[in-house]
Amino acid sequence: MRIALVCDWLTNFGGAEQVMLALHELFPFAPIYTSVYNQDKMPSFRMAEMHTSFLQKIPGAQKYHQLFLELMPYAFESFDLSDYDVVFSNCHSCAKGVITKPETTHLCYCHTPTRYLWGDWQAYLADFPLPFWLKPLISSRLHKLRQWDFLAASRVDHFFANSRNVQERVKKYYRRESEVLYPPVRISDFKLSQNEGSYFLAVGRLIPYKRFDLVIRAFNQLKLPLWIAGEGPEYRKLKTLAKTNVKFCGRVNDTELAELYGNCRALIFPQEEDFGIVPLEAQACGRPVLAYGCGGALETVVEEKTGLFFQTQTPEAIVKVVQEFASRKWDSISIRHHAEQFDTEVFKEKVRGIIETNS
Image (tube, rainbow, N blue to C red; front, side, top):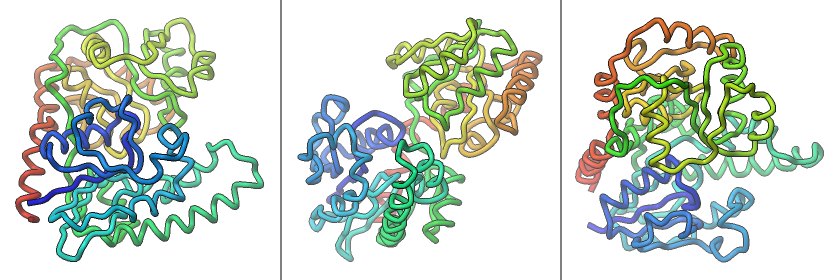
């Protein structure tokens, strides 16, 4: 059986790239097709047979691929996948738009219907630094891409959504049914810790929708230690907002991140995510999660067993849930056991079954 793997781009390691790595490990001889590939940033794929689009040769495309979104449909439609029995696309943007032969089975693992085209497009446009007079033109171009994206979704034979949250979006925007398949988390990279640390932790890129500003405002009131791991364009703004009890750890490597998880009292997760791997990484270390009760967190955190939810994105709600957390006892072993359901090997075994069923 001849299998090809397709993904949007390979330029920085995140959740979608973690899925791609698991697929590559499962099918090491399957070629990978992607729009652009930065080998220096993605060393895990050095041994893969990599096929990139014409965008790879455009100066700056590897670093600023978002600027070439209008060319992405042409990039993926240009790939010749006629030699394959199964095409497995790993997609949150345009990768599902590849064209396959009628007898080829196209399976799509969908992280979300393209965010900047559907439910969140107004927020993306508002945050983009453009002159006000240019935004109506961009909006009209997004309309054209939205039409193509809907058409591209019709080319997929079977959709797999990374959460029930995304499953609902796939049905709403693409009018397609899908099967939930949770993404892989490398649980073995994180060790169980039963020592309650002295600080609370927040992890992620410092960008607006992650809502680190809410966490900082809450801890300014609580006066409890808060450590933030990550970097991004919001750093200066957040640094100015924070009082002395807030520590910015900057960018950390995998080993440092595991230590931060293991030594924290709890993870604070204030944003809405399609799925969200960070809460599971913290739970793999036996640490509870205090999460905004919306999106993927509802599927990865068990109320009162592995964490607590707050229902509004406000500093006051975070203050309240932190105070409630402090009055409870937590079973680190039980929290770790819950996270193990999402291990990479569980994901791989399910993908094997999917390929066998659909080949």
